[in-house]
Length: 67
Image (cartoon, rainbow, N blue to C red; front, side, top):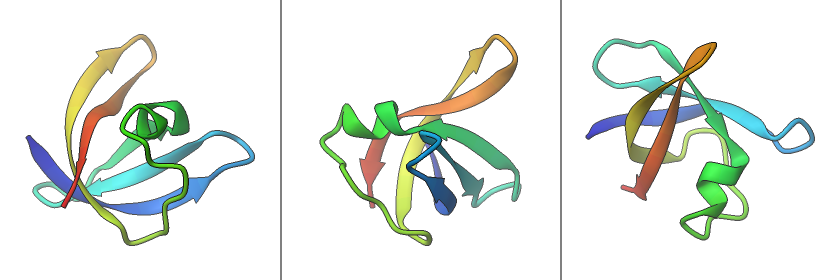
C-alpha cells in the first residue's frame, strides 16, 4: 500500500487530494471512500495508507487506513 498526506479536502464538493510520499503526485479521493472506514472529518495534513484504483477518467485512492 502507498502512503501519503491529505493536501486538500473539500466537503462541500465531496472530494480531496492526497500527495503520495513516493512520487509527490496528487491522487483524487472521494469523501464517500473515507466514510467507508468511518472517517467523518479529516484535516489537511492527515496521513493515510491507501491503494490506487484505475477508474474511468482518473485514478482514485481507496482502501484507506489511518497511519
